[in-house]
Picture 1 (tube, rainbow, N blue to C red):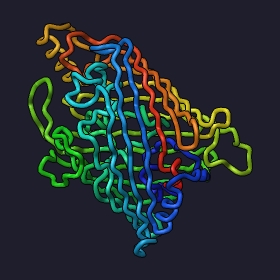
Picture 2 (picture 1 turned 30 degrees about the horizontal axis):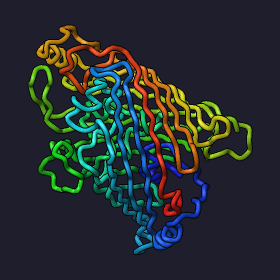
Picture 3 (picture 1 turned 90 degrees about the vertical axis):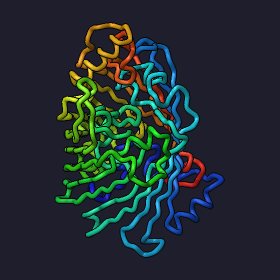
Picture 4 (picture 1 turned 180 degrees about the vertical axis):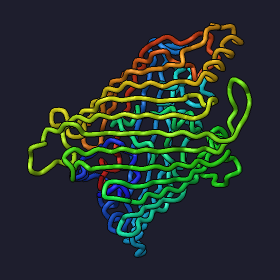
Length: 438
């Protein structure tokens, strides 16, 4: 396989819940699932629940939050159904209940309790009970050298891939906060195309609707007009990928640039302007594998990976100006091929205008007149632990240095360094019930 052939969920880099060769157990929906696959339909149903707490940091330490996502989807193979070679339709709806201490406005909720962007963005801030996460037509052309998708989708399905092997903590302040994009899975109108230039190198480009307003207006993704859109988002770049099944030391590198045409208001000066641009480089590289002398390479080897990200936003009014992070991820410890253990260090540079804005609100509330640090750092240990085929748990412990109060700028005091704990349970209910093949 080459980058232009890879489906969106693989391009995104999310960890696996089952091995590719795993056969689903026989369940109550096995017969129905086989029938659907025979006619070209592949359903999926994945449940995840995220728990977070901040023992000693943020404006309100010791708070707890709960977020839930239940993804129900269907992939239709149009070649099998109506003879359209290389054509597919993808659909996914995500339900968000139950939740606790989440939502918007952020100040009174979990995000406001922890304050810092690094910790607050991880939790679901879901207003509506569900959202249309994906409804696209995908077409492969020229022997899979060109692949495009169009419909209701999200940029993170294609760009800014998950390079830290953990669904929970591959958050991105440049891509989401500074570029002004809602986090996954909130879909808007968009299109994506990738073309394989060489065996391992592909060019990719995308155009997406910039629409934060439907979310804030308690939307659900099913209102398809663009009257609440603030602009458009353009993304483009190059993707280099060597798969571990065909190369001894596989790796992936992605260079992407973005431009958002929306109107932005400087939080400090209150001036407005149109357009914000930036760029990001992401990489992940296998540097050691246990089976390096074996004549037949494993597609999921035990080994050590190094990963990192560099990004910037070229706008003084952006909340964050630069991002640098790096770490190590060990795959398959003790022969458990789906397990991942990571350690990561992250640095983000907040803009001066963002920190002056926070100071002004703090002083207006009768709080600390000092300016918070622009240099925000995080040291994090996390894991992706397979409990049973189709079931995984992701624990995380973060220590945040010089935390900002992005989600609660009116807090009276500057938050102190401290710990944030999190855990996410993921269950492939389609696999366990026999509905999904994998």
